[in-house]
Image 1 (cartoon, rainbow, N blue to C red):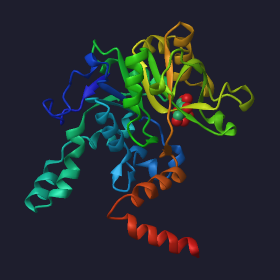
Image 2 (cartoon, protein in one colour; image 1 turned 135 degrees about the vertical axis):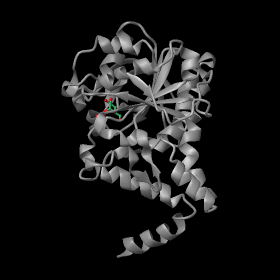
Image 3 (spheres, rainbow, N blue to C red; image 1 turned 180 degrees about the vertical axis):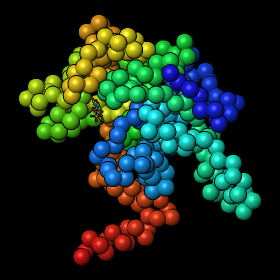
Length: 318
Ligand code: G1P
């Protein structure tokens, strides 16, 4: 059951727009109910989605990416113990008034930024039954006329930002469901959903990174993997995924896997394509990946970059 975050004004720039009629997206689902076990003890009390990459929580980077892809609603799938995530989307009038009175305009803009991007709604996932189950919980947060929606996994930073816009373009051309793929070394495929792919008939240069998906398997053994193109945390899903998820029984790890629901859609003749992204990723869900993301972003930040670079060079010399 979705509940609108009451503190976000409905007339905000995040209010519902008409992106859907132009083949765009309105709702982005963010599965964020996980326990964050790879990041304990920090995640005992702080949801991993609130840990800051330099100064910005991962969930705000996701909200920005969603907004830049044209979405107006962020359906955050959380559990009761992680309500701190939703609190981040609340206005803090005392803080804003204080910053305003002190003339701290830059900080004020930073505090308000997330409310100007998007409207967040909370979706409850009471049991950790897998990514497919989490996505299924968000069905009621879509409007009746939305025939597709996006899923952004907050652990996964896909860089440079903007891949969802490419995926929307692919859906406008081919319809159906569009996924984001990455090429990984063969010995890493078992950590991912893996695509079986073929070339797209009649594809032109604009589609050099697009492949048709003929099958998909969740975390196969290396010997059984159909390719080394794997799913990253960006999905543009046709609404029919909800029916497929209802028919999906627990798979790898005893969880309801979105990969299995997508494989079912393919078997039923639904068009599925993958946009093979050429860029970088950071896994924010564990300290090693998170540190890399912080260093990567900080080096590009004019306030921190130059001194960090000098310090790193000095530190690495030792
Ligand atoms: C999930 C998906 C997997 C996908 C991965 C991308 O796995 O089940 O298909 O490749 O995200 O990050 P997880 O990393 O949650 O185990």
